[in-house]
Structure formats: structure tokens, C-alpha cells
Figure 1 (tube, rainbow, N blue to C red):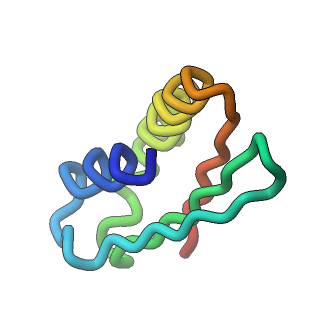
Figure 2: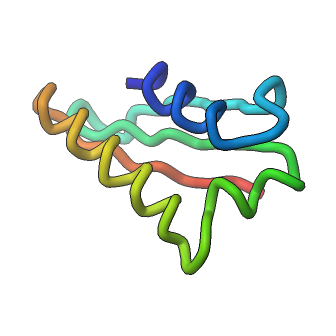
Length: 77
């Protein structure tokens, strides 16, 4: 799942080398992905009114549900 998020984010940003994703398990059914991008790419990942960020979260939730888990995507600044 981390690879899916990494692929989507790297396609959105201008500096794909600066994309960092850390994965933490909150419990055995919940995974937290912490996403860091270059400061100038932050707006591209969030999008207007947070629509891009919400779309990323929906896709990740659907992918995790398929595996019987839930996921949280946090965008770090």
C-alpha cells in the first residue's frame, strides 16, 4: 500500500525525489502513513479545498479495506 501512495504522490509533485513516506501501525488493523513533500509541492498534494488530499485518502482507504485494514494518511509540513 505504501508503494501505491508513493506512486500517486510522485506523479503529482515537481520534486519526486523529495517524497518521503513513513508507515506506522497504530494497531493491528490500522496503518498510518506520514507523507512529507518539498514545501513548494505541498499545495499540489493538498489541492484546492483539500480535494486532492481527500482523493488520496479515499483511494488508500479502499486499498486497505480490500486487505481488511484501515489507513490514515497524514500530510506533514
